[in-house]
Length: 99
Length: 170
Image (cartoon, rainbow over all chains, first blue to last red; front, side, top):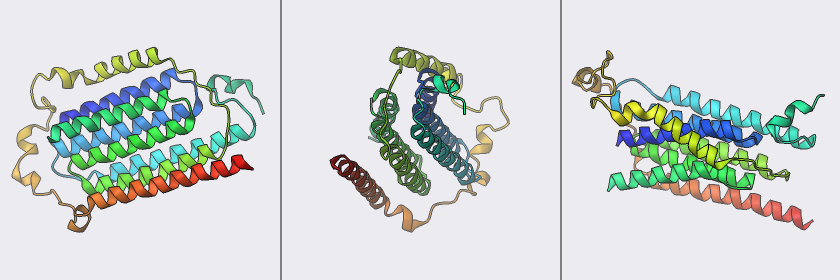
């Protein structure tokens, strides 16, 4: 059963990487970073509970959750700024704007 | 039976991860992302870590998804989408097989074959004596926690939708 979850986390990680590579929407790229963080936390926990019977995984997972939260908060602030200033959410057009 | 549930969870998570890119509205993408968080906490539950599953549920579904919803739904803006689905599928499949071929081919059953951590060390009694079981009062009420989180998340979602409708009426 551990292998199923490892394959699942690898599949989610692949979807996240290719989502960053393919999409051009600002928030969708941030969402795919979230998918990658979720996948890596699942992989860490499956390795921990499948192969390691000692130690503590909680500290590592707290790091994962805090990185995910900070990521979303920064992205939301930037998103609100982009919307208020009527800029485009296309990341390829961000270099056209100069303040 | 358990394997069937695990495969259902896998299908749920992968479908949610694809729906993040496939749906048109950005708020629906956020909803698919929260479904992905929920499925991930179910996976934590099946990896025999119920306390971490509950914390994952509270932090991800309760905190981060609600923050995403409030941030996304309070502004209405043009939602363009230029995702190339064929490129996404091809790239995801390629990266999946590139990363996971040691697991798929599997020369031996031990994943840590050739490293210092072999199976005799990992599964010895000395090491497994460090394992700590979670407290009883949390693990006994896990369906209650999940039901409560789904209920609260539904209430938050419905309130945001109601606020948007009230704003449209004005």
